[in-house]
Length: 547
Image (cartoon, rainbow, N blue to C red; front, side, top):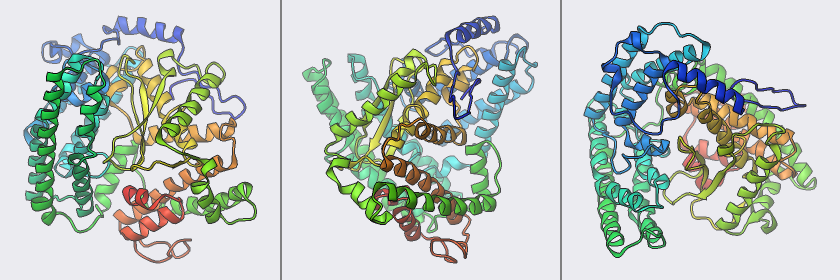
């Protein structure tokens, strides 16, 4: 998490940000020719108008970012960059080709860039060059032609962007209406990519297609998050009879477009989808490098995962005895799930509980363990609209922090929510996990390029920090009940199970003969769900969503 991180248990002092450093960094940025404070898009594609000799890694990165954002209004919305919230990305093969051409042009530009004056400039150049290479490799592998899944693909992006759009102004609501009316356009482009994938023999796994069909059904049904927008507008100061009527019409158009896409998936795409879930070793290793920033030996990682499963199982049994020494692990977990005193009795109560935990942690640890930038001290907690994959996720703040970072729980409509395994999740997704990590990076305008701060994030690093944050909060005493420690261990077990399930399934590896779970058998969807329910103690519907 930036420079100055001390990992000794006694201090746990992280000083990745302070005012003096930022001021010094901003002066350095000014010398480099950019302030790092822009919240908007340049109308001048200066990379094509200036010579490389006139630029440095920061200014060239800025130009690349501006041009990428011109191609992605969705990314603009996430970054809080105004002016394009009524538009959609071009998800068609033509749109993808334009993005690739842009990346190739900037790859050439960075390859001829002179060496930087200082380490931050050299870092900006390395980060941008690596990002460009990875993005081109992704497109060369034609992953965009089969980019459909239940949790993180363009379909989910098109729905989720509405969650963070401005809904406090007339213009904000008009943008919502505009995007609802026109959502059929990106869906049509997306469909064209999927059709090209089928024609090239690059089908999506059938299970993923079926999951998206179900999500589309939720989005077009009575509980649709689109339909809830009308109620939200009605309670807003922006509500007028004309605007409410326009929104309701737009919702009808949007649900019709989604229904048409779902009909295409079910009637045309699904019969051509892949019957097997596995992607194979070559594709898996390539994707792992993109996520981790390094190459792994999947079989070595598979063996390590089983070691972790055994270790964590033993620790969970020991910790369960601290909750109730008279009962086995399974019975203890069942009590934690059902005991009313250990559950929030409503989503509102759950949100209040989690907010209290996060706000307490920020207040306690600021200046003692972390120096927290003022804009990062706020983190919101929300219940996600129905229809997405179950679990928790984090959405980053806008570039200027006018929209705070937020943690979202997709609960599947449950009203009673156990808390034993959610306290550690709050620290993972919120503070001091992803929220601090992303917020500090956004604050380092004096050192990191704007491209780096807004677009570049490696899951291996990001999730690694968040997992460390869980351990840190345990060491600092914030998992103050044995059941919360058990929840942390269950979360670690979930990750260990993911390692063995993911690698074993995609490489078609046998479960080790000495394994504690179905030794010698081959992975199936049913076995994966069973492991997540019996070892990580996920609810059955959550386990199915994970797999």
